[in-house]
Image (cartoon, rainbow, N blue to C red):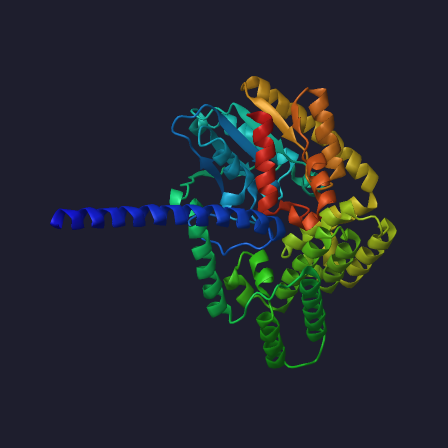
Length: 457
């Protein structure tokens, strides 16, 4: 009798374990299916960051090491490689490493706003550095060129040495959808408690209008005779209206946002506004707003205190076609008349020259690009690695044209991201795949990694 009870108990426990396993399997499959379609619709909604603060993405190179590595793949470039707008697990180098099932070592040498000239210097430094003598890439993937007109004055500047950061990959259970759902719920309540607000499904139009109205309000306040105490109170009120998406765009850097004065806050608002506009291909309007901000605070803008906005003004100028050069120059001349000292500013001189001599500058940049690419090709021959080029998913026509030209001239493997993403965008929309001109969404990075994997494996 006792033995029969023990057998029944064992059978019940076994059945319970089997039932639980089947249930978890079904739930996992269901969540992955739901997650797939969720990702297709809401790729611009990210979870709060959980990355360690012991490093900064632009200060180090990421090293994804395989114990038994068949090859070493070095990815080098700008924001599309660095992927600083998302968690590192969404970057294409990280996902490429995962696609190879950890059989290949992948190095991420992406730096935001880097140029072809910067890549040449960094590759040269990498291969001549004694510390890297045991790291011999078999493939080097390059995506670069969008910031060449921004960097043309600094192509001979020395490049600081970057340290390597060994990335410890997440434990296996973090890949489970059940874990991700629990984590998502946890972050939802944490954000709700800390901010006192819920993400109410803010769309781009609402986000832009809120930022625009607050920018205009701050601009009016700065020029008014209202006492400073009232101005500070209004600034605090404006900051309380910042949405979750606004904070996420600046990586939830509340320490800076909370301390930002009114002009610094206007800078943040302009960046957010231009991001939304450029994602809708409204570069003309974005340029107008950035010019408005530069004319409001010309001294700090052209002296480099708002360098993110300066980078944005150079990039949007290349895309836009509505504002004529003579009209932009008239605005710049007026700024210089009101604030003569800016004429000595490096940034002011650069941008003025770019606008005044656009065709000549672009032609000179192309010449310098081709010279730099020739030297990069020479490095591939000297150090015996396969050089693989990629063009941009976004329409950086000048950079893409040079990349295509170089690939054909030197018979390099070209991964045509522009055609690939153009077709995807035509079928759906741009914001599903590109956050802005210089960054992809998590889905975009995943698709980029898959495309690279399929073409180089």
